[in-house]
Image 1 (cartoon, chains in turn blue, cyan):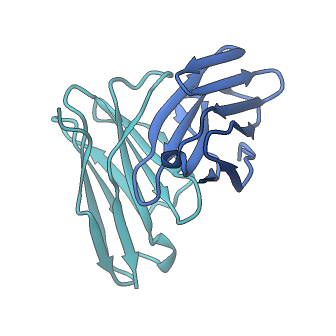
Image 2: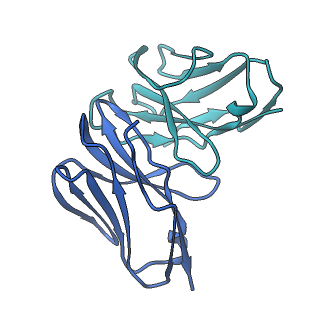
Length: 108
Length: 114
């Protein structure tokens, strides 16, 4: 497998900032996606990184270091609706390999 | 615009039976991928089809098969069902089969094998 590693669970407070880390194997790597999945729903696209650096999109940002096999998703100004699982999905060849997901709970 | 649609929404089968799951991609999308998601885990890639040809296959047994039709809809077939096949089956479509593919997921089919 591609040994994708994410924390299983995280908890944060409304209005705070949280960083969800992801590590993966670099061999055959083509890019990395982050998806959000609310309980009982399908995953929805958040971000895509192919080059090193930070991609910012509103309250969400994603960072990639290809040489280190490392990415993170940064969520700012947390809202209750951000409580969900966050899936790191490196692209190998033309196929995604999803990580186990990080379940984020946002508390009032 | 309609998103990815899947049918049925829920399905209950018994061990040894066969099941067919259906997916209609977003209009204009030519690639369909299938994933299995067991509760508490991330989706696992099963197949990708593009222009009616298989483009990729995950680490699943031959009991799993799929096809894509001329209208780009797709079916996933699973034979000789096992208890471990109980999962959410997700279909995702994308415009092309290229290496950068934002995939749009359908709501999934929840399969329970008793």
